[in-house]
Length: 206
Image (tube, rainbow, N blue to C red; front, side, top):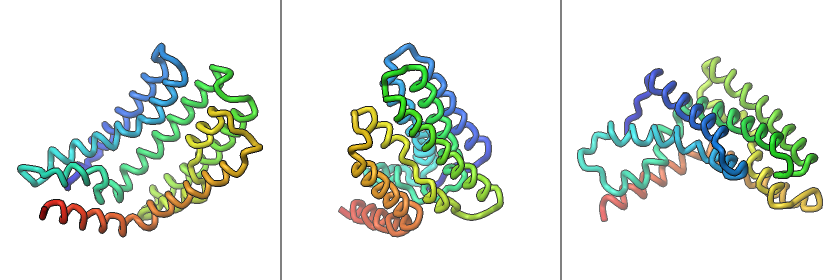
């Protein structure tokens, strides 16, 4: 499938999700629901690419296999430009969530809020380094993000559900699983894409 990788479209995708996150942050709704919607807003940019790919697809009559596998398109997975915008918007969204948490005391405990702040700063350093590597022309520099694995959402969920330091093993499991998932995504994605292409071919031949 083909993606319009023009700078104009990339910027449109970035700013669309950015505006969506800002609008969600000022909606007069429950702050917890607001946080959930902001954290789920990454479907906006990926969705725009997928819709565009469907429009530009060379298949005049896309099969169900095209729709099933479009969200895992090799083009999108390896599109470094998309990944830079996605990681930047993720970070912006996390800071908006952190602001909501500071403005609505009681969603998480103060000590947990401090931990989330430290985690976000640590992740931000990794994202900035990733963006720097990208601007230097390094192809697929996302493996560097493994050094600052993103567990912000997962830790926030555990804190909100009431888990704390006495449940340290849960946080350890989260870190290990998230690191492994990122490792698979950044290092083993080609094998996954190959499997998906074979699955797509199988579905088409049915």
